Amino acid sequence: MKVNPVLQAHGLSVHHAGKAVLHDFDLDLMPGELLVLVGPNGSGKSSALRALAGVQALSAGHVQLQQRAFQHWPAPQRAQTLAYLPQDFRSQWDLQVQELLELGARRNAARVGQPVLAQLIESLDIGHLLQRRLSQLSGGERARAGIGWALAADSPILLADEPTAALDITHQLNLLSYLRSRLAHCAQLLVLHDLGLAMRFADRIAVLADGRLLGHGSPQVVREAGWLEQAFSLEFAWHDSAHGLYPIPLG
Image (cartoon, one colour):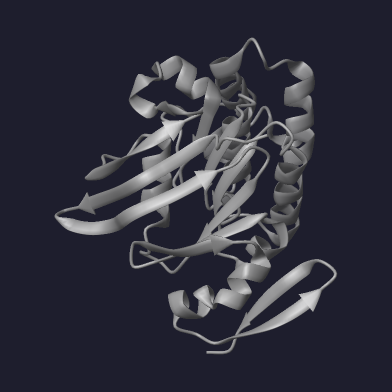
C-alpha cells in the first residue's frame, strides 16, 4: 500500500535582500520518520525549515501538508497539525515554564491531557523549573522550556531548528531519544549541526550546501555518496560503532 508524505516541498526557492538562499528545494517527510537537515552555516537549512513551516515567503514553489496545499489550511488547524520551533525561540511574555507549556498545549486542547504533559515534563527534565520565569533560566534551561512549548500540543508533525544547540550532551541525548520514542505518532524534521548525533538518530539525512540539496538518504547512503565531504569541503574518516556511523572531520 502506498504511503503518502505528511509534508512535501516542491521546488522551493527563497530570496533574502535580493539574494537567493534556497534553490529549487524538493523534500518529502514521511510518517514515522526522523529526518535531519545538515550543512554548513548559510547553506539554507533554516530557510528551508521556515518555508516548510509556512513562515517564510517563497520566491517559487509550494508546500503540501498532508496532501493539501498549505494555503488551504485554516491557521488553527495547521497549528494543531504542525509544530515549529525556530532557532531563536523567544516568548513575548516572561511566563512561568508551567504557563508556557499550558500555552503550547492549548493549540490542541482536545488531544493533550495531563498525562501527556507529565511525560513531557519528565522527559525534558524541567519539573524543577515549572514555577520559574523564563528570565530566570539559563540558556539551556530556556531552550528545554521552548522545546516543551513546541511539543506540548502533541502535533503529528514537528519541525525544529537546532533544538540541541544550547543543551549539554546529557540533555541532547535525552531529547533525541525522547523524540525517537514519539515517532509512532509524530514525524519529525530537525536541523542539527552535530553530525555524529545526526548519524546516530536520523532515519534519513538531507545535506544542503549553497542553498541546494545535494542529496538525501540513510546514514550509510550519505557516507557512500560523499555529500558531507562536498558540503563542508573536508575529508572525513568514518567510525562504525554499535550506535551507528560517526564521521570524524580530518581538515
